[in-house]
Length: 149
Image (tube, rainbow, N blue to C red; front, side, top):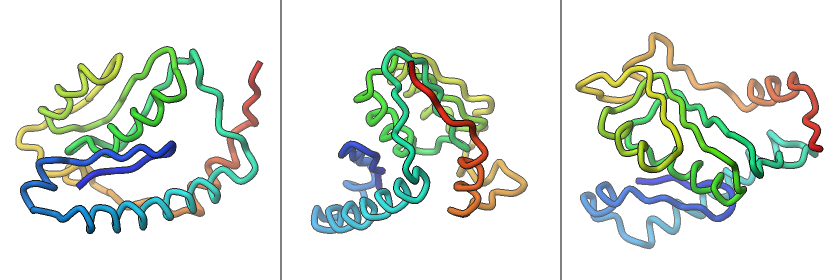
């Protein structure tokens, strides 16, 4: 029904919310629960590392795919607050309509495959196993320290 991101960003999928008549109280409860999870993950993944300074930089947001686009819209909205020079979205697969919608929402969108009918992101992977928190931390720990000038 939507997505949240750092900086108080919340994107609701109005078609889902209205179509399923999801009450505002449910939306608020889910938002509060997901905000706790977002905070937990940020602390776990970032450790003592500061958030990167993205002002005037080209940022490429990558995801495993776009279905409704709510999660990516939240990421883009949060990123815009950080004043990047350019936002590029890159995904291996996307619903054709969602890929088209993003053409007006970001500086550039790359959707490698836009199968029709789309179904769901996971339908286009042989293995769509989600990675664990430990795997994310391990990958982040392997990255060299980021220095800003």
